[in-house]
Image 1 (spheres, rainbow, N blue to C red):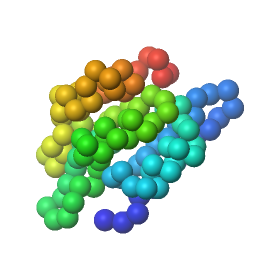
Image 2: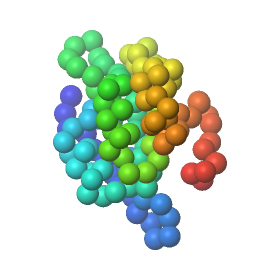
Image 3: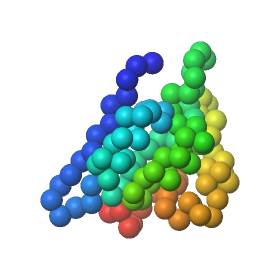
Image 4: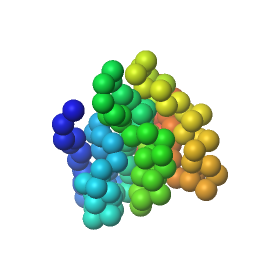
Length: 117
């Protein structure tokens, strides 16, 4: 669909945040994780796809690699949201297993994450 746009936000005295935007796992995303070393990453992880073409959001396999590469906490959002987003919270929990699940947050609709506020 086109190039994605992500942002790393840095405010003195606060954790840095990487907002990936709607993207799949590209080399640019990997480079951002390695070079910017964000404290918190927010990534849509629904495996969304349109009627034609490949995924427009990270698949479960890409999310697993993203979480392994991320230096800090990963918040996965945009799941169980729309009919073109087949990935569920259960899919993500199962794929990540016990070794990676502790480094992510899978907020429910409307849920706040106290440790990040």
